[in-house]
Image (cartoon, rainbow, N blue to C red; front, side):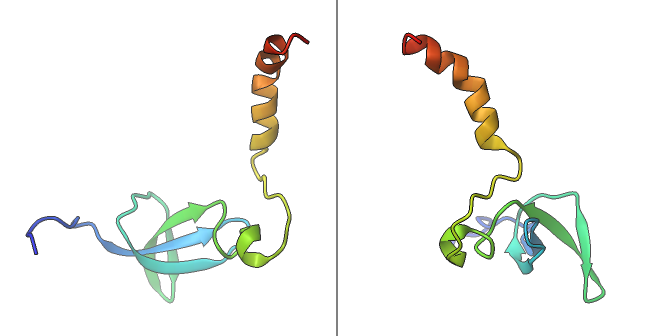
Length: 88
Protein backbone atom coordinates (compact mmCIF):
# COMPACT_ATOMS: atom_id res chain seq x y z
CA UNK A 1 0.00 0.00 0.00
CA UNK A 2 1.26 3.49 -0.83
CA UNK A 3 2.28 5.68 2.05
CA UNK A 4 0.76 9.14 2.62
CA UNK A 5 -2.37 8.44 0.54
CA UNK A 6 -4.88 8.64 3.38
CA UNK A 7 -5.82 11.92 5.06
CA UNK A 8 -4.47 12.49 8.54
CA UNK A 9 -7.64 14.15 9.87
CA UNK A 10 -9.54 10.83 9.88
CA UNK A 11 -11.38 10.80 13.23
CA UNK A 12 -14.67 9.95 14.94
CA UNK A 13 -17.46 12.35 13.90
CA UNK A 14 -21.11 12.58 14.95
CA UNK A 15 -23.66 12.96 12.15
CA UNK A 16 -27.03 14.31 13.29
CA UNK A 17 -30.22 14.18 11.23
CA UNK A 18 -31.87 17.51 12.06
CA UNK A 19 -35.33 16.38 10.91
CA UNK A 20 -35.63 13.64 13.55
CA UNK A 21 -32.69 14.34 15.91
CA UNK A 22 -31.14 10.88 15.37
CA UNK A 23 -27.35 10.73 15.64
CA UNK A 24 -24.74 8.23 14.54
CA UNK A 25 -21.00 8.11 15.02
CA UNK A 26 -18.57 7.07 12.34
CA UNK A 27 -15.07 7.93 11.17
CA UNK A 28 -14.80 10.79 8.71
CA UNK A 29 -12.62 13.62 7.44
CA UNK A 30 -15.58 16.03 7.18
CA UNK A 31 -14.70 19.57 8.26
CA UNK A 32 -16.97 21.15 10.86
CA UNK A 33 -16.91 23.88 13.46
CA UNK A 34 -19.74 22.41 15.57
CA UNK A 35 -19.20 19.94 18.39
CA UNK A 36 -21.46 17.76 20.52
CA UNK A 37 -20.91 15.90 23.77
CA UNK A 38 -21.82 12.22 23.75
CA UNK A 39 -21.04 9.90 26.66
CA UNK A 40 -18.77 12.53 28.22
CA UNK A 41 -16.69 12.90 25.06
CA UNK A 42 -16.73 16.00 22.85
CA UNK A 43 -16.83 15.10 19.16
CA UNK A 44 -17.12 17.09 15.91
CA UNK A 45 -20.74 17.42 14.70
CA UNK A 46 -21.99 17.35 11.11
CA UNK A 47 -25.63 18.40 10.71
CA UNK A 48 -27.66 16.60 8.04
CA UNK A 49 -31.01 17.66 6.61
CA UNK A 50 -31.94 14.10 5.74
CA UNK A 51 -30.48 10.64 6.28
CA UNK A 52 -31.57 7.05 5.87
CA UNK A 53 -33.49 7.35 9.15
CA UNK A 54 -35.75 10.07 7.74
CA UNK A 55 -35.69 9.60 3.95
CA UNK A 56 -39.05 8.37 2.58
CA UNK A 57 -37.39 5.64 0.50
CA UNK A 58 -35.88 3.99 3.58
CA UNK A 59 -38.70 4.69 6.03
CA UNK A 60 -41.56 3.65 3.74
CA UNK A 61 -43.41 6.86 4.54
CA UNK A 62 -44.17 8.84 1.43
CA UNK A 63 -44.05 12.45 2.54
CA UNK A 64 -42.31 15.40 1.00
CA UNK A 65 -39.47 16.62 3.16
CA UNK A 66 -38.85 20.22 2.15
CA UNK A 67 -37.53 21.94 5.27
CA UNK A 68 -36.04 24.91 3.44
CA UNK A 69 -38.80 25.44 0.85
CA UNK A 70 -36.38 24.70 -1.98
CA UNK A 71 -39.06 23.56 -4.39
CA UNK A 72 -41.00 26.80 -3.96
CA UNK A 73 -37.83 28.87 -4.30
CA UNK A 74 -36.91 27.03 -7.51
CA UNK A 75 -40.37 27.48 -9.03
CA UNK A 76 -40.45 31.16 -8.10
CA UNK A 77 -36.96 31.79 -9.49
CA UNK A 78 -37.61 30.15 -12.86
CA UNK A 79 -41.31 30.95 -13.24
CA UNK A 80 -40.70 33.97 -15.48
CA UNK A 81 -38.09 32.15 -17.57
CA UNK A 82 -40.41 29.24 -18.27
CA UNK A 83 -43.47 31.36 -19.06
CA UNK A 84 -41.56 33.64 -21.47
CA UNK A 85 -40.12 30.71 -23.46
CA UNK A 86 -43.44 28.89 -23.80
CA UNK A 87 -45.20 31.99 -25.20
CA UNK A 88 -47.48 32.55 -22.21
